[in-house]
Amino acid sequence: MLRLNLPATGEDELAEVRTVLASGYLTQGPKVQEFERGVQAIVGSKHAFAMSSATTALHLALVALGIKPGDEVLVSDFTYPASGNVIVQQGAIPVCVDVLPDTYAMDAADLERRITTKSRAIMVVHPFGLSADMEAVNAVAARHKLPVIEDAACALGAKFRGRWCGTMSDAGCFSFHPRKSVTTGEGGMIVTERDDLAQKISVLRSHGGVRGQWYLRFDEAGFNYRLSDILAAVGVAQLKKLDWLINGKRAHAARLAGLLAGIKGISLPVEPAGCLHTYQSFVIVLDAGIDRDAVIARMRERGVETTLGTYAMHSQPFFQRTYGYKPGDLPVSDRLFRQTLTLPLYPQMTEADLQLVAKSLELSLR
Ligand SMILES: Cc1ncc(COP(=O)(O)O)c(C=O)c1O
Image (cartoon, rainbow, N blue to C red; front, side):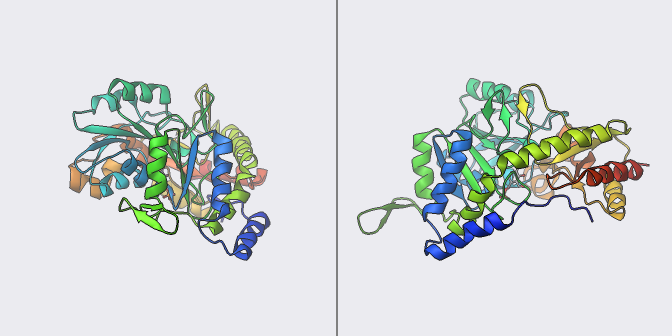
């Protein structure tokens, strides 16, 4: 079976992990800081905090921004539901915003329509390694004086008009899950330019304890959202491969797009002018009337693993039951949830693998 994704981990990561295990500093040691400095060196952020996942990073960003029960947080609807779940965990109300049909990213016009007097923040997702239109989103945010969190879980290394995803807002959150740009198995990071948020995040990430001369003082009831040095070591080795990973995916994405160009019934991913797409996932849209799940099954029979693009949050049972959404309330997101298909794409793939993906898709659409 040709896998959907294959992490590029091996001897380099093992060597880094060995140094941590031999050092006796398994958490809150120097590797976490080295990993944080590594991400900062790439995206140029003032602060970076390693976290146990993007989900905990997004949650802590909301806490640091002071989001409280009953507040409304506007969030891209077409996303992995972790984006909305953290809003719910904070007692706040996720207000789902529809997306654009070509980039799958937040529709700034729909965002503005859904703002109310209870709106307190915007969480914008960069889908599959492509930046949302941050100029449009930030313009709405500025008009309504709302802070912005970037859910850049899929977008380490992606750019919008020369700026790095994660650094165009109050706080950006990355994921290091195995299907992301680089992996630590599980892991995440928050980057921010704001000193006030950085201060809160550094305290709340680690139980709310402030260090005194001999012991901690607990000014807040915080969390343990830390990343261990063992996992940070994997991240340090992975960051050295980031350019190779992104360039490899971009080259394969161009080749795959070429192989798929003549196939009827599909729309290929776009890369708008000024954007650098990392192709964290290569996601196509099948025309209405094509049964996406049947295509997934047929491709599996031909030895190719595929999956849906991602979820329409408002179409999921929890969001319908709790907030009264109905499927199709956000029509673009709902259609993408039903008709998108993620194809295998990673640098280790060969030309034969890419041809197999294209051929099996073509045959599976018939
Ligand atoms: C857009 C988005 N946000 C958040 C997450 C959650 O990331 P993590 O698994 O690191 O918690 C994911 C993971 O798939 C994601 O795709």
